[in-house]
View 1 (tube, rainbow, N blue to C red):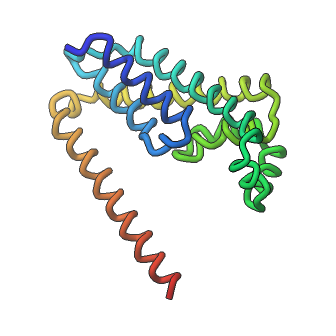
View 2: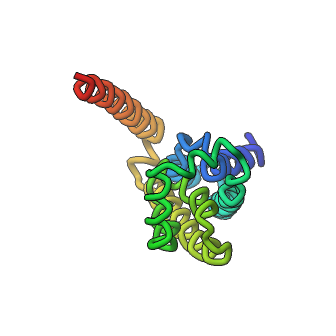
View 3: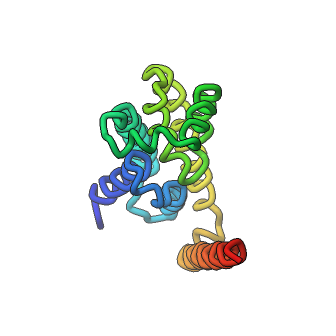
Length: 193
């Protein structure tokens, strides 16, 4: 029905989530999981054999772009001021000590994963080291998310009631987001008093 456009759209969304800090809010895991689940549904137009490389290269290229942005941040005055803050220095020190592990395992932490390549580049992490750990992290992230989604989509209940399952998960996500927003608002008010 959508042809190659769906793969292009998914590539762009994963690339934006991993490569551009302003799009850190995009749900990378959810896109991978649900696209892979949909690929497992009988009669689906999505093919898991195409999805996996699409996700892999989108995340890999996105992280590389984000790393390069980080490497060049010091050229802009606005970011020079930010780089002098205590929090940035603490993050930088932590990153120097645990850089490889952070790149590889930070991939599994939503929002944080988008900032890791940026900090890697700004902290002066060697490009080869970044590429090695990033490659491993992306490979594991895509393999786990795609596999879990695909196997979930093969469950008989999911095959028979995909619309219901999709709406339930979407509703759960929406309710969780609303509750989290309320919690943060109440916590902020409590701390202000």
